[in-house]
Image (cartoon, rainbow, N blue to C red; front, side, top):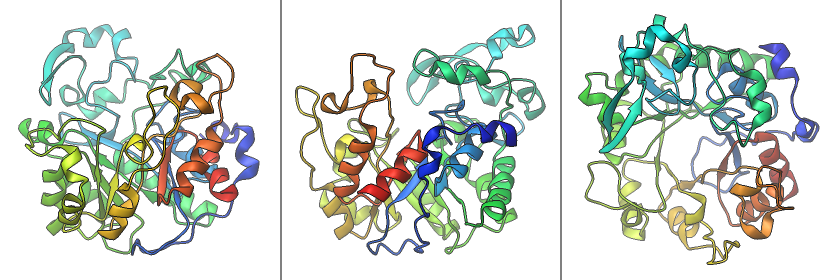
Length: 354
């Protein structure tokens, strides 16, 4: 693990002093850098190698997405379906586990974590989810296990000691309604793990995030850690009559502030793109959220051209790096409180240069 993390990209030399601890009291502080699924621009996502690298190149927080195994252990995967992020398809002993389910109303075919015990899941290995985009990451295919949340928290504790700074953690509960219907609710084991590692208190450098507001309302009386409501640029939360757009009105934000401490919007909800895919002008979202006492942490900032506004691209290769640094500086100057990025070192440098 240490040897893998040592192969950090060149921008590590630009790592700045981390943002000061704030207690998240909504005062105007240095924006924080959130390692999206770890350092997923450089290592297969949601592996201990990805999390460790994110911390070493300057992320203030590292993000595990949480799903549950058949024996009700929380593990770190982006989705319950793992056909694209593990080598499960190459395991003939698990061929009969492939199936189709309704995942939040969407027909989804593949292999699902809830059909595997932790012991079975540990026989699999992680692979790069976007091999055509991040071919270099395929170098690490097959090297890393699927980590448990507890393993990730133990790594966080070790890195905090080693690096001399408190590494934050921002777990996301993935499809909580879906898991609850399976008898594998996420909230209790999540809070149990935070308790075990001494992180279930208001002063802890912890956020819990969810795309489902009901999930956050249920969590509010059970924990004093900070909660963040994730929003999409369109649609509604699962099994919720209220659209994401309605949640982000001034009245909706004021209501959110009764049980949440921040929002995690799609970055296009902060600065939309114009018809020609160039970057437009900021909306009132940051100002409105701050007026409601909420912090704003948009997602997801990625360095490759295909993820950037047209006016921030360089050349014609969709997988080459564009002007990602300039894009992040633009968003930081719009007043956001942090950003989710696949390349945390770029976020740290953007924060220094803004």
